[in-house]
Length: 360
Image (cartoon, rainbow, N blue to C red; front, side, top):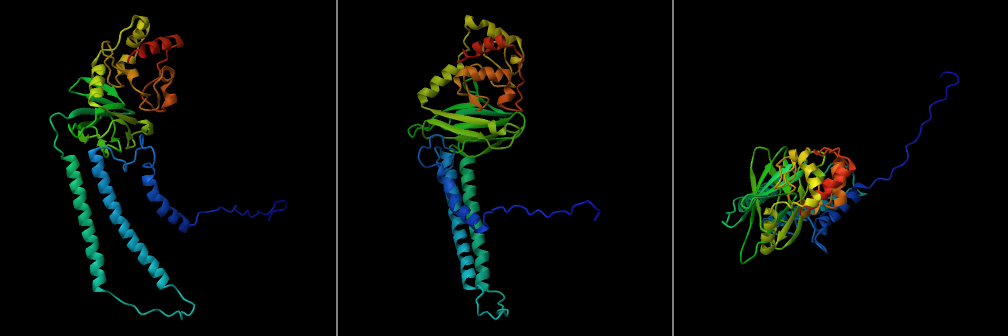
């Protein structure tokens, strides 16, 4: 060692308290199943649990899930019990002489059991799953069903009603399906860019939205209310803020909503300056407003913007204050969003917002 050089000191790493694998396993076994049903206790109005179904396809999926959980639960109990029995029955004892015990090679009954039983289980699960898939995917479409076209974008949902000429975004309205008059809603799913996944857990399962391919699914809500959904496939930076709201209305409410959505945007002289800004800037390249020169398809249709509860596919409440902040710097709400900042001065933004809040 060179003179003047201090020897290296061995520094002991601080002790870290780790969860025992046994405790972790026990907690997983006990708490895991409880989390599946936690959302079903108390108020479930905005629950996204598959165990609180409110639509025909969702009921089928839940029944299949419970059936699979029951079978796998029985398997777990049997295997876990055998492991515990083996640990207790054949544990090393104090009087053990250390000699190798007698070896038994092969047992026809045991080998037949662990070959035939798994085969039967797999066949039962396969046939049951295939029946549910057929029941959901090949369901006949009644003539009075509601048709909705859903197009996934980065990072929002375009929603169209071809029969009625209605276009909206991020918030879907459908009628409730009454027992006296079943009214399912059939969805035509497409993607404008990357792969997305449409999922409203309490109404149906997941269905992919694939570019250059049309997938279909259907829902049949049993009660009115708001049901939350989201994109279930990672589609880019703001995947987690690609939320969806499905409003299930009474037949009368749905008819009234359609009538309101089919009307042209209001044209008020008091906000003419804001309308000119909308029509003379890049807004019209991406957004459409019926009754104006704006016919863009890259962004949401704004004809009835203020009839929606949220902005940016659920990123913020739809208020004039948030709308102003969104126009000024959308990237502050959703980093990576494809909408650019409009670079308008404050008076222009105020005039534009004053116009947009009249679009109800």
